[in-house]
Amino acid sequence: MSGERSTREGILLNLLEEFRECGFDGVSLARISEVTGLGRASLYHHFPGGKGEMAEAVMALAADWLEDHVFVSLDGPGEPEARLAEVLAAFNAFYGEGTKSCLLDVMALRNQPGARASVKRIFQRLVHGFERLALDAGHPPEAARQRAEAAIVAIQGSLIVARGLEAPDVFLRVIESLRRDYLRIV
Amino acid sequence: MSGERSTREGILLNLLEEFRECGFDGVSLARISEVTGLGRASLYHHFPGGKGEMAEAVMALAADWLEDHVFVSLDGPGEPEARLAEVLAAFNAFYGEGTKSCLLDVMALRNQPGARASVKRIFQRLVHGFERLALDAGHPPEAARQRAEAAIVAIQGSLIVARGLEAPDVFLRVIESLRRDYLRIV
DNA sequence: CGGATTAGACCGAACGATCGGTAAAGTCAA
DNA sequence: TTGACTTTACCGATCGTTCGGTCTAATCCG
Image 1: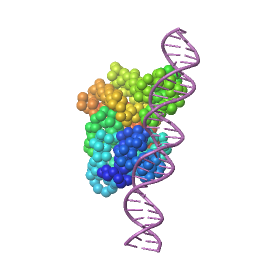
Image 2 (image 1 turned 90 degrees about the horizontal axis):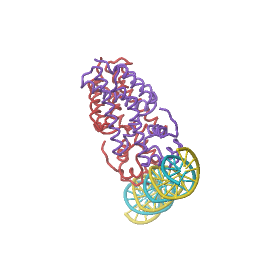
Image 3 (image 1 turned 60 degrees about the vertical axis):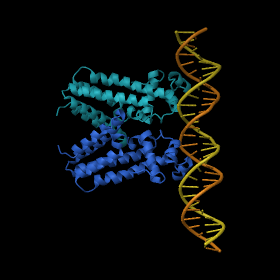
Image 4 (image 1 turned 90 degrees about the vertical axis):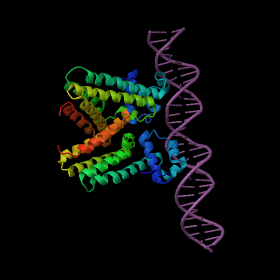
């Protein structure tokens, strides 16, 4: 996930960082123009739908990234332990070792129904993926569902608390505890 | 926590609901004027510091509310089980049974250092309060600290996921599991 | 080949609307 | 009459957005 400026993906990567840090309403087109190096009008060439379409595109990019780095491990073949480790490493990188917030959180603040729906779909896919992983490790169905939900809750919560406390290690501890305990049969 | 319009606290309660739902940047003075029934200039009579001071006042109100309904139970006398039940009931009410977001989350998005500091102080106080409760229930110090942190993470995370999934029961389940397990010695 | 045409990326300047914020006159209770 | 409070009218700045146009590179035609 590098950051070439000129390509469309490079633009979206910059936008992703801005949105996740300041929220949708907290990012102005002036700021977007600044970080992308493109004039306001140029941005409307790439995103005729304006700021809203930019946000949608960023959400789509994040969904694609999840598909490639998380769901591929969650749903894929291989030992559950190895798959879990891959997923946690991917999250750890995406969230900057606990220093960056989750795009889903800030996008969920928007009133637009489409944004809410995208967030919901991704959350559902996440829970389902973790549920699959727990099932593959031998957990009974209801327990797997509970664990999956609890894991997503812990990840999201630790990001919030890490940002609030300005202590990224809260997130790191949660990741580590998931790595240790998520698959363990009690 | 009722909502008389005219008094200062009534104004702040309306503001609290707006801020927690739309975020600081998502709430305009026009909207604030609308929900409070006060003209723009009247708002600046009560809050000479403008929108920023309004946000600070809301944070202070929330801090006071925590003091009266959460910390008084967390730090106070009484059986740990009863104190825990009071705190969880207070949270449940404040968060609308999982339908409302946390003010701290949205305020943590602001760039202003003062806002970040307030959020940080409250989070610290929350963790410390839960830590005290676990200590009183007989947990060893390091375990108490871990539990407290995990509890706050679970509450915050469940609010995020509940909003994201549009499923408030995620929050309710976390509250219930805390009520069952938080004090239990393993 | 060379000249005209086209399509896409990009930008400066400006749009109307709304932003947060203010000055001054008026209202009303004490 | 004083001080708390509201109303009306307004400010400059910035918001997201659009218009008109330039530059470049590929494409097409002769």
